[in-house]
Length: 146
Ligand SMILES: [Zn+2]
Image 1 (cartoon, rainbow, N blue to C red):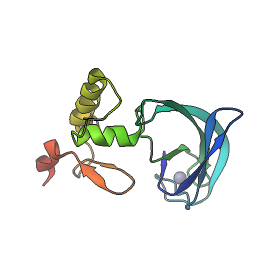
Image 2: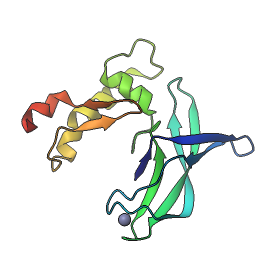
Image 3: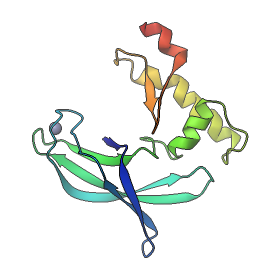
Image 4: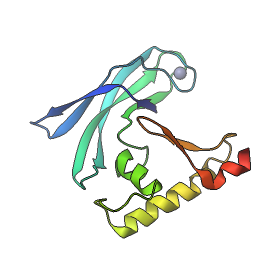
């Protein structure tokens, strides 16, 4: 997966979907090669901060060196999460007053956040989540790695 920080979102009215165009050099996260080829695309649904379902057309890329396939994902969405990154960030920071999602969803996101480190415990540094402007560390487990 290639997470984009600089990109353009263009709305396609006809198909009701956002098209993403990277405005940065794409780099293979496995071998750091910069030659990635577009081999297709797929739809990706997400729920924005107002609770509105939206669709993205994300591109599938093949690395010209290692041959692995990656998806180009804008940082407004978090991998394997249906809610947008901003919603997840608000839940993690416990800033949930005006949040447009159900209590059960908030609990699930908190549970995911608190247990995320257990799924990726091979990572030898404090786990954090990268948002547009900052990295939020999972302080619950941070002490284990200091
Ligand atoms: Zn590669």
